[in-house]
Image: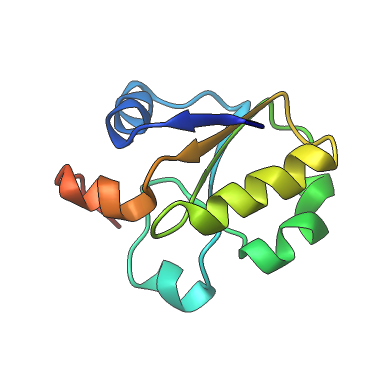
Length: 107
């Protein structure tokens, strides 16, 4: 498998500790979905536009990707990986469904 999986608990812990400036959290859902609630600190780049933002993402050492269920973010991870973006790519396992199940807040 390309990239790595990260659990909701692991990502929540990283956010609580303060993600380094070399990391970014990317929500790959649509802008409409993003507006209804996002993980704190996340930016929105829809999966169908992810490669158009390659130059923006390239400087980040670690990229955490998520969507609602984990499937679109897995696709984004594959696209970024195949284009040589980032040393460390992570997909939030089961996406926001897992995040909500743990009771973690959305903004």
